[in-house]
Image: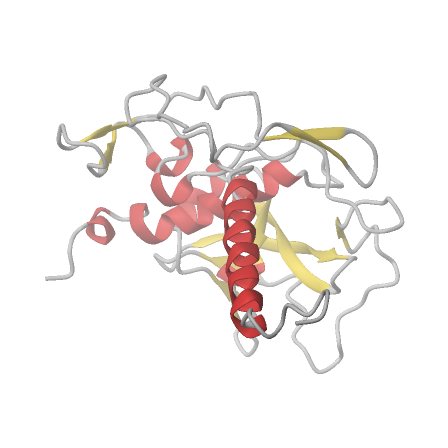
Length: 256
């Protein structure tokens, strides 16, 4: 055998296969560590008890530079210290939680939301993404589509809740994101997410099946009437979503 002629004694295909296996195992290990930057470290159901992380699987903190300034460290060093206004129905770990107050307002179950930033999400130009059409003059309603402004909003109980006063649009992904509703009788303005809306064009009504008319009075308010923060977005959507389970006592009961 000449010097350097090793292929006669080594199965090159098998070496390549083993190399691929090693690479793939390393890739899985890397990805399993990186996917623990959100939602970790874990905690037991008992508040304050931290689960065993394992030295191999929680990555070292990494600082990310945000697009429009600021930084974010992940995994996050801060903990969510909000009071959980619910209690387990049994003593074993993972037991379902029973709300102890008003679950729609206490952030329990489908009403839960993440502590996202208290600043508006922005488009590439640095301006807020979701704004009312009164501030987005280049947006309009397609002539063939119903314009909900001025329509009556009706809850799941068939009772009038208020009137649509404006449409909030997403400037980054052109779409209608919310309807702004003046709630009767005090005309307090709240936002109604479009996925929870069914527009009756003929009767000029906006129907909402998730909550009752009286629940509109407790929709989370905005800090600024002209913009919505990421956290407020989550809070509002969670409030309406929770109505599918908590708006009526019968909704929380089994079908059979």
